[in-house]
Image 1 (spheres, rainbow, N blue to C red):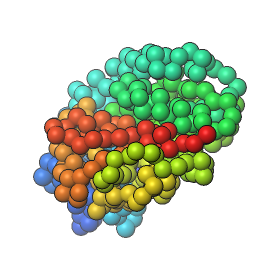
Image 2: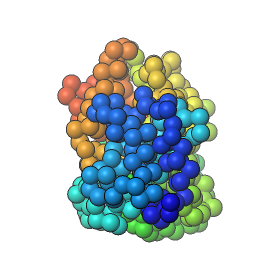
Image 3: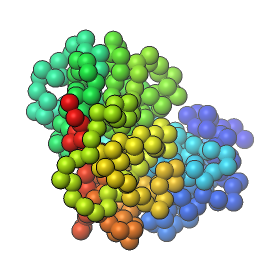
Length: 370
């Protein structure tokens, strides 16, 4: 049968394999676990996409809804014998839904309000960093804090900038004039993402390295952009990777309270980019002791509920996912919860009776010795 969704054509292998799979990854999905729904398991979502692509189901609001029941965490991929990219296929389906005007109302709201959100984050960055650090220059190292940190976690953005400036050993500048475009892609605006990513990559030209605090931004502008045909010669790294290269300059933080310190792997940093050990080495050096771990960590780490625009399209499910992570944290000993992702930290802190949450950057900057 003819493929009826052109943007989904590149993902035919994925949705075909998933639709005939015996649901080996059903335990992996944070959304279906929170909802208790077979429809929103990876198998359910991809079977729906498969039948939509083949014209066996109508692309209407009811069938478009399950395309958005995904955080993009890629945990299902870690259980899959075929390394199926469920999130990428569903994002293509979202783009078709937006074009057909059948996407959820929240998706259109994200797209329509994106420019205002971007401008709000840029204004916040001006207040946080000042014009001198934001000015376009020939500084070889660029710090990219990300919109979420600038808008809602300014202290973390400041800590990240200070850490990069002190560790780099060369002039640095801050790039916060725009967004990486990931919210647009996740909402279903593929063209908007490509435009945003193209503009931002152009802003990096001439730099030797761009250091990202937000794993989602790094994943969008390195992995996703490249997959969609956008190339850049600039080295792009996460803050933890820069810190790991300069780990000899870190010392244990003085007067750090006793008790467990548990690291939560960001989905885009871990499964997306394969960065697992660098933040752990840095945190162990900063703490002067071992880290506590979730039972499911590394490649099998569980999602915070902060990705895929789920907090904006289905807040209740996003909250339920975050609350389950916090219950697990308490069952396994509690203590300080450390995240290298602003969206995850925000999700955790928004829940009732949340534990103390610290950003990776806030601990790193306290461990640097000049």
